[in-house]
Length: 82
Image (cartoon, rainbow, N blue to C red; front, side, top):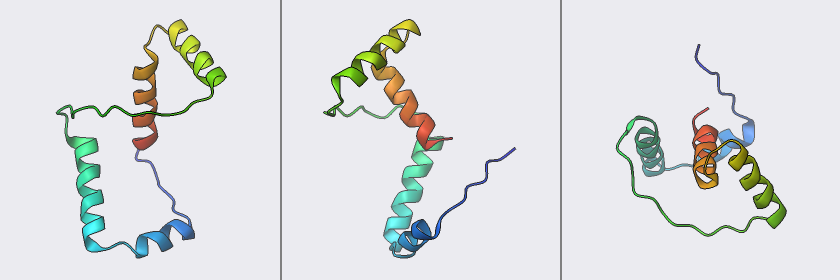
């Protein structure tokens, strides 16, 4: 069963302003994200997270026997590819 994606009018209005190059870049990025199985290089980032949130998140990951950074990446992928 395929998922149905619904768009609100604000999103559709923003998309109407995209240039053909913007659309092509999006489609290429989407294709690479979903169909390119070759691992891409990682990018080191810095992010501020409230200490309590991070401590609790790391604790839950430890209970699940998974590294917390791996879990963050998994959550990001799940968000982008429902």
